[in-house]
Length: 240
Image (tube, rainbow, N blue to C red):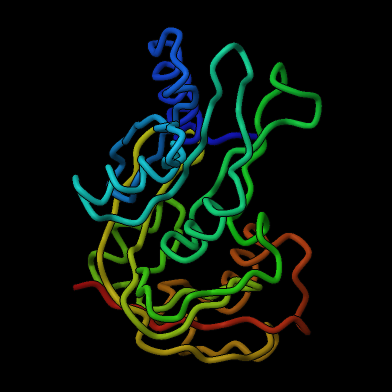
């Protein structure tokens, strides 16, 4: 199911492609949302000498306006073709420059069905990562954690199967049923690995929770199948 923000991105791409009219040079529109909640749109430039896909145009447009990491992106073809999956080149560029973006791809039964949101890495399994691009990672949070992070009451976040490493990070706070996001720039300062059953009272304090049982309950809301034997990463975070 699409979030409210992903629906905004899809609507923007559909509106853009609907305004193209007939053109051999421009047949696909793309839209993306950045970490600040801005929507960016663009169209492909087809020419016999070559030309960029709509997704690449949108990445450039976003960089010119804000430079923030992209949260979600999609492309829609003209002539009622609906949502289009990105080509191999676009998948590689997204993986290198916006590794935490969600890509809307065609639904299982064609353009009449709702698109499916997928992580970029899932579109390019075992892909090569360019090491020197320096893309800022995104750390997603539920919207309810924003005030605690801003106030310094929450200084760790516990993650399962969501690898991160120390360094700059953009924290994005989002409610899947509400349009818009809140954003903070910060950093992951430490990454400690342990099993759920080994979480400590200090982890609880830095999560701003009353006790270990509360922390485990919160983890199960995000990871329903998690057990005490599963390994998690305890990320120490700070805001700028």
